[in-house]
Structure formats: structure tokens, C-alpha cells
Image (cartoon, rainbow, N blue to C red; front, side):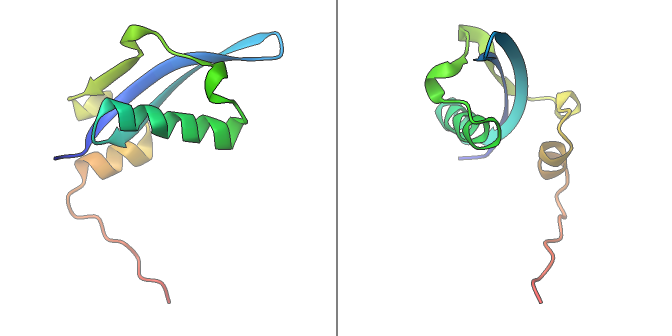
Length: 88
């Protein structure tokens, strides 16, 4: 299995506002990507799983690395010679 990049779009309600989001995640399959989104949105934005609204076409696999706008995901996807710094 290889790691793929997925773009997940959706929205959630915060008070009376409807806040749209679009995230790039690396995962083995769409289900893992969705679980990753739930974890990110829950920890960073305090949004419950039931408050996140996704449509049928909201999970899309990205095959062209130039479409990825997230700097970290793009770097891990395209750079083959990443050097991980050693802890002192």
C-alpha cells in the first residue's frame, strides 16, 4: 500500500455562521483520510464529528502534486530526500 493525498472539503456551523474548510491529508485510503480530518477539526477547532458536513464528492484523491497547496503535505509528497533532524 502506498500513501496517497486526499483533498477534503466541507463545512461546519459555529454559532450562526457556516464555516467552509478545505484540507489536504495523507492517508492510505479515504476512510483514514476522513478520520484524520475529524481528528484535526476536533483538536484545532473544537468541532464535533456530528457538526462536520461533507457531501458525496467532498473526498477527492489528488494525483497531480501541483494541485497541493498545503506546504507540508506538498513537501512530504514530492521530496524524496527528506532529512529528519536528530534529537540531541
